[in-house]
Image 1 (cartoon, rainbow, N blue to C red):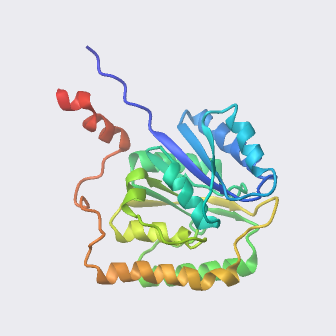
Image 2: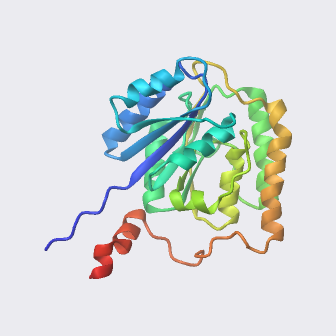
Length: 274
């Protein structure tokens, strides 16, 4: 009797969306097309965060023809962090990537993340400021603040990674579970998850990515409102690192890394019966 083929590794994409009616369909179409061309099993979990425009209708119209697209209404408190957390509670894949609804993140980079997560590391961290990256139309003042904040985080945590504040990152499902509970209700969730993953001992790989300024709509990120919130969550995770003596660190940190497909084969009932 021949061996059964392993179940395809499934990639989930969590996309928070609030009043993105003009951007969400092109973003979803670009992601669907690229993932399908690569033959990657996917689900696009689009979280409608209380939109008052056509966002929900656009998502549902696509979900009606593509079972890989899911509309998930955020029925609780609104805000970027709440919307992402809603999506992280709903995804069903082996790994998950957080992607912005405005088309600023590259579908090609999403595919590269998938292979990192499947074969080489538990987290895929892109950098817009590494050799080989491409950044188009980044606002000058926002760039200055970004570089200053990331320098501070690098020095505080003693890491080389230089784009912690970017939301576009990927994680295996076990990393998301291992980094709970999440505290951030706003954009500071973008630093809470990767810093917890690093402090708690999950492996990660960094790679250069491309980013472009949104073509439609207005970003909901307000720098003047987020500074103290970013600082709070950065210091919260730093205190975890310094004071908890590894209480929250993964318990299997010493085990060798295994690709997702290998883990599935070894853990399957058929494998255990042989």
